[in-house]
Image 1 (cartoon, helix red, strand yellow):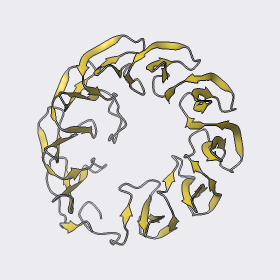
Image 2 (image 1 turned 120 degrees about the horizontal axis):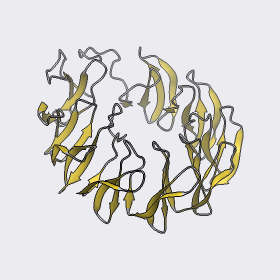
Image 3 (image 1 turned 45 degrees about the horizontal axis):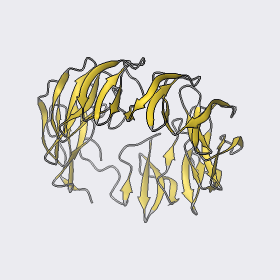
Length: 341
């Protein structure tokens, strides 16, 4: 439906992706997945066994048929026929990790094997043009030619992210290395953030979380019982880099980059929607507060999703049975209260 509650594509699917990508929607019918356009016409018939996932370029999508994985284009042509035990999407390198006969390698968009490996596990290429691969029980990093830049000697890794450092695990503890494999922050943490934003990332020693900079210096001492990265990717609709979610005494709050608590830890859960709005959960119900901590939308909904470019958010209420919409002022819009199913 549109933001006024007008049904544009009638209810006929067992499931549908909540948000569109590439101007298309993934739908499910009788345990099979296909793709429709915004007019409700099938672009790809529902014949695949798993959720169809598009790459960022909207060129190819992963599909599963007859228990094998392959790739289709936006017209539904099987460019790379399903033949792999598993596959990941193509990234900006133009390569995708695929699993065949229990081993991983990399293919290009023609389906040709570019990096043979074989590897026990493999990740996509990151911002440093490196990919984490696992061989003989240890993780290392290769370049796009398949050569090891960092030898496989780590127990685990989160890969390279923003900040140019990779989280790696050795001897049961976490630390950070640079793109040459040099240790930048020693292995002494029991948990660690994936990346640095504003030169900060959360780490933990024991059960106490705090924030360090890229030199390993403590910048926000906490202690917190949990903490997320600044610009946390989970539940985020845009890149808000100056606030982060923390947990104290099993309650969620928000801090700024100085460590100042701007939203007191009073809530059962928190998701930062954007630079102006934050979803909070209270006793199983969800609402929205601003950065000043005041409620914009009272916590009365079963669920509430992020605001779109028109400042409209979908809300689900009556224990998940009904759907509607609100604006950033918390005002109900002109919608019809319809059962989801």
